[in-house]
Image (tube, rainbow, N blue to C red; front, side, top):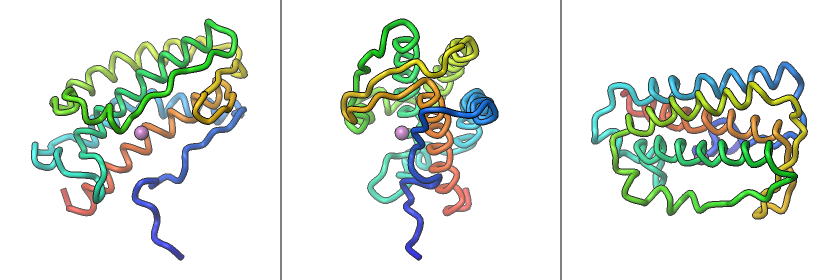
Length: 174
Ligand code: NI
């Protein structure tokens, strides 16, 4: 058996077109808890530890935190587009080069506070969704997804990055 891929501690991103009510509730709970879980994941780390890559050649812990905020801001816009337009084509972005822009050197609390506010709005909009089958299209993959897909993707995404940080802390005994 090959070693687990350190990039994907939880396995690949799920892209279901439809969730059961129970799966939806679980994903909403995970997304609601993400800001506090990410905050707890970096709690007490020094600047040197924050600037340590979570794996060889990977992003630093600091970059991971800022990336989650970048990604979930995009999620919020994608959600609002999908709720207000007919099958909108969303805008891809290059997350690798975004993670190298100067704002990703800021202290993590900047993005943790942003995520607190962002998720308050994101979850308020999600709590109001009545049609989880509303479509949106990602042009890079050329695929049309649903709001269930968006919910499952981003619930996974937050946990995926918290797991990167937890694994690093475990390896170093931090
Ligand atoms: Ni990511």
